[in-house]
Image 1 (tube, rainbow, N blue to C red):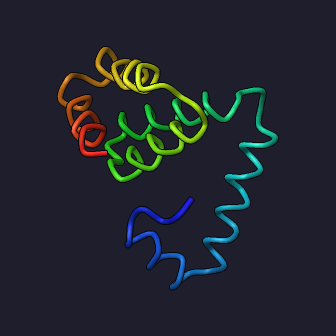
Image 2 (image 1 turned 30 degrees about the vertical axis):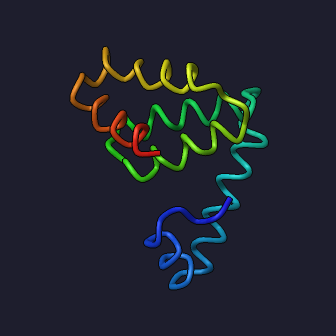
Length: 101
């Protein structure tokens, strides 16, 4: 996947070794951390990103979920699950990113 956010590209260029090790850890966890498929992991990470107000990550994980075969209904359902735990305003921040995507 190409870099969506210029700041991430800048980070990779300034700190290539840290980026490489962070990516390797993430890949290892995805491949060896448990039984969840890529679609499920992407939806979960989108919800975590929304709940923690990491809005650029919300955009990234929406795209990854789509690439992994998630439907728009599944993406929206995962996003709606933010409301009962984190509140409507938090959901609306993420929903704005969804609508802009």
